[in-house]
Amino acid sequence: MTTPSVVPFRVKVPNRAIEDLRTRLDLTRWPEAETTCDWRQGVRLDWLRDLAGYWAADYEWRRCEQRINDFPQYTTTIDDLEIHFIHRPSPLADAVPLLMTHGWPGSIVEFLDVIDALADPSQSAEGGPAFHVVCPSLPGFGFSARPSRTGWGPERIAAAWTRLMTRLGYERFFVQGGDWGAFVSTAMAERFPDRVAGVHVNMPVAPPDPATADDYTPAEQRALADIEQMSRTGRGYSAIQSTRPQTIGYALVDSPAALCAWITDKFWAWTDHRGDPYEALTRDQMLDNVSVYWFTSTGASAGRIYWEGVQTQPWDSIYRQVRHIAVPAGISIFPKEIQRPSRRWCERYFHDLRYFDEPARGGHFAAFEQPQLFVDQVRRAVRSMQWGSPSDRHRT
Image 1: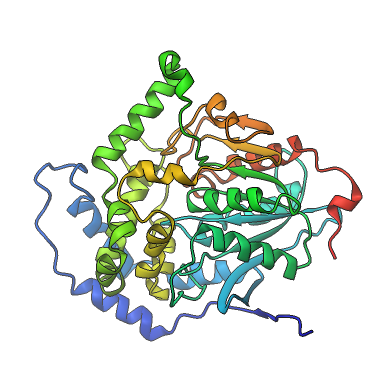
Image 2: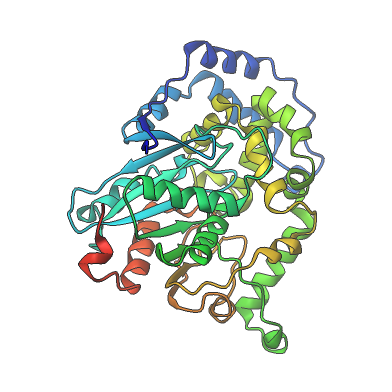
């Protein structure tokens, strides 16, 4: 039997693509300013024009490209689709495998500041464990191929990621994810409990317990109020991408200004700041992520994960995908996360919840915003799952 190949990969964007980006930004036809003079109608014109000007004149893509290329990267074909991934083995013999999955509008760029720290405990005050880190790009995102047929939702991705870990020689491993990465990670934990030693998520899907409706805590009431507010004012992107991703895709692939606005709107709405999104992420961090979407032309294909995973407009429909997880689990609820279920709600679905914490800082893009806090949370969660016997650590 032929072993499927794992091929080394490096990012190399042609100079002409960088020049084309700058030209398109310079030729952007801008709308008038928002009539509210704030962010209630979307990304502010003055803020976006300033960021786009920096992108065109001063931003250095080659710096980001080199940061990505500093990590060992590969591609391999699974279900006729070429999947890109970072694979950073730990130098320590007792390291455990960890698969981390990003979401939308993220990418592997979210994890660049945490991969080495996870692989080498000497970089963390928390100590071990050390991890062999695997970070794939979701199908249709970044440097993975764009699916040409339907079917690449969280279930199929979960099966593909399990095959990827087998191909890398990891029979037992931990999984971690936020956003769509949380859906994929919990799907893996539910479907492949013999392979998944434990799961850590920073955006758990855990609907309120109806039995507690008359006894919601103040924190639970705030969490529900924030979800209701988001449903009223912040779900447009989800409604569009879950029903008509192709239509918005033309703008996202053709106009860098449109793509930048579409993504940075979420950096403003979902990060932990007091009015200025640069308090949470720098201009370069934002543009590193946006540039990956731009140079890979994945604005349309990435949005289709909503069509695959939801396919209906109401946000409540996503609760149909809630899972009952039997494997050991850890949950970190960062204060500006878009869903913040309480521990008692999570325990209804995560039946062996070993770790639950609420860090003081951070939002939806936890690894991007607060890398050290994120690393510490992952380590504490895995330690609580008592990864123990030498056989559990075996890497074939």
